[in-house]
Image 1 (cartoon, rainbow, N blue to C red):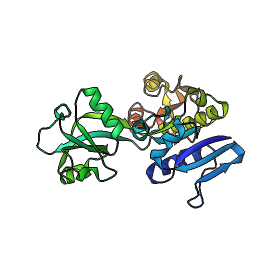
Image 2 (cartoon, helix red, strand yellow):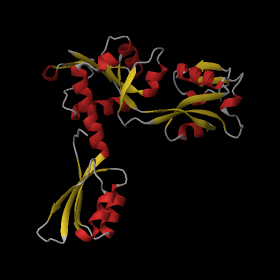
Image 3 (cartoon, helix red, strand yellow):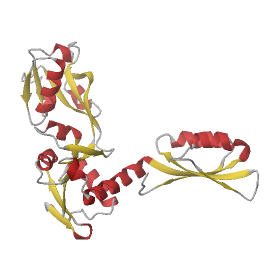
Image 4 (cartoon, rainbow, N blue to C red):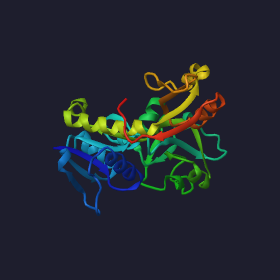
Length: 282
């Protein structure tokens, strides 16, 4: 039976349970149980701390897991990332006292507070900077004010928390994080039951990125219209009863679809309809 770890709490947990459920697996808990068996699909789900998932997967105790890329990369021996999931996105950045002028290359001899020690140590080594990494488990942004550190490294979404602590983000992101599926190794990810799980999950991820766009278009504007909606291989074009018109159907990226509809309308398209899709294999 395939063993899969899901986050036990927080936004990563909500997103993971949602995508796995939509993929046809029974993984919803009635309470706070740590294990759930989906006998119909041959899967055992284990609900673990997001930070621990990479450890269990990398050691082969669990076959696959969903966690944050940052949490996986911070593990001493990261598991193999096999599929990004498109939710839980954030940046891992350095922040310094506002107006200090400090930059990452100036961190030599400084103290850097963080909750992701391994990521920071690897990045500083890559930069050739010798700094002291101070490991804290939470409220990293207050470390400078408390005199524990000269700068911090933390997961940044809006940056509001850092600004409220008198800090400003500096330098390029150390890494861009999001929820990912991890496996022990390529061999584990190639097992038939793992491949089926990954294909199902990818189908949901792809479906969330696309919508089906349908419209009627004057044939005189058809060539311009299909440039706007090329579909995956090519759009479906069907004749209408009126020989001067055609019906077009194409998968389009959800991002920017409103602008595409505006342009189609300007070309004279009618009956423009965008429909969400539940799952896809592309």
